[in-house]
Length: 131
Image (cartoon, rainbow, N blue to C red; front, side, top):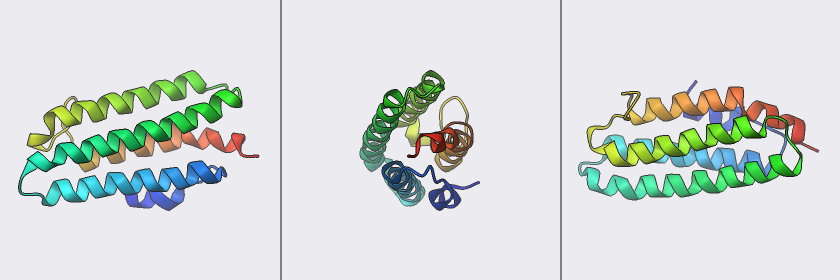
């Protein structure tokens, strides 16, 4: 499953989260496209910073909704958020070679892999929070 196919395929029924998911996937697609085309990798650190900020804000919204709803899988879901944020931090530190530390995948493959698994295993459960 690719980032593009996830953009419209993940619907929680919570309008704000669905909008944020599409926006976050768009940001990931943009950084991957730019990363693959840029001649100088120096400009990539700013893109990672933006991706990290957008991802952090999105996760804060999800976590607030889960806490307010007393979501049973909150701790597990939050831990997965923390793993992705750590992965983005690692990518920020190693972006020059185009590989993600720890998994040795391209940036696009790394993000697609994580987001597909997170959407399937974690975010699908958020449908129960839709009112």
